[in-house]
Length: 260
Length: 190
Image (cartoon, rainbow over all chains, first blue to last red; front, side):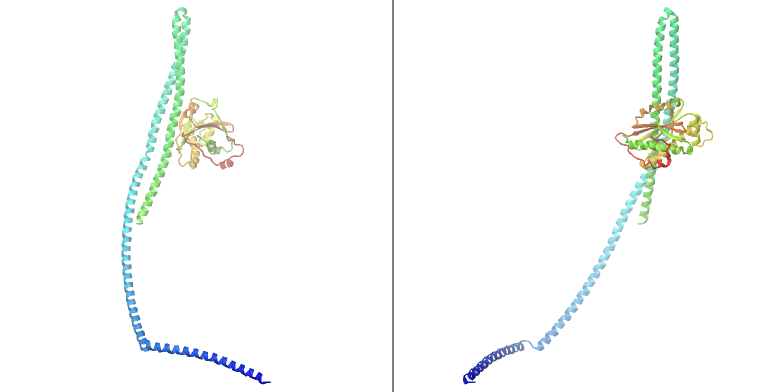
């Protein structure tokens, strides 16, 4: 190995040592600077807060905390008392309101009950009166019988009239025959007899028509009366139904009243 | 006005009632036939016609029963009403006819009460049979007549005049399930 190589290696080593020494020196300065800052900070803190002061402050804080706790408890008690008082007052007012409302309702229901009872009494009276339709039907029945009997009389009279007319026709025919027998002297009488016969025929026709009308009259009168009677019976059934319903309504009213 | 359904229903109800009320004669052949005029041999001035009304709010049915005054027909009537003396005459005949029309119309009235809330029935009244010729004077909305006979013996003619209030329509229908129970094939309906 020649000298030049040895010099090159030695100079390299020297350069490396220089490089590491510079880096170490820089690190050492940085650490020293930090230590200095911390020392300064410690010195500052030492100057501002003392341990005694902290203890004193802690005591003060504890005292204030106790005081606050006591006041809070007092406030809580006061609030509870107030709430109890309010609740008591509310309960009293509520009870009073319930009593008043119940009283009002009882009064209203009593008035309603009285109105319903009065209405029921009126309705019951009306229903009872309506049942008087039976008497009306009996009256109609009697009147119908009178009309029917009167029609029977008219029929009998008409039949008698028809019989008389028939006799008159025969008499007129006989008169015509006698007039014919009398010849010239009976000519005037024959005219009278013919007139009489024509009148009797017209009367006979009239009697027949009258008879038919009496039959029609009988049919109309009877069926009209029966319509009244059937409708009356129907209405009576309706009224009985109403009577039953009103009694049921009264029973409901009484039940409701007894539960008040 | 009246609908075909209502006409058929009314006719059927009376027919059914007639059959029910004559059911005690079940061993006999009962026929119900439509009829326009009463046969002349049964027209008698002295004979009475029995009238009865069935009424509701909007309609009424005038029922005219013309029970033929023959010995055979009256004998059946006595049988149906269980009257020992079959020679019905005078007051007994009036009472029997009145009772029979009450029975006929009672069945119909009960059935109509299921269709209409309120229906009423009159009592029977007697009229001259001649009155039966003038039913047109009642101005019925519809009229129908039928004759009921037992073993080919005509018993009575029933005329039904249905009068419907103007401006209303009578329309109802009856289920005829019972018809099948009664009918045995020999019965004729109209």
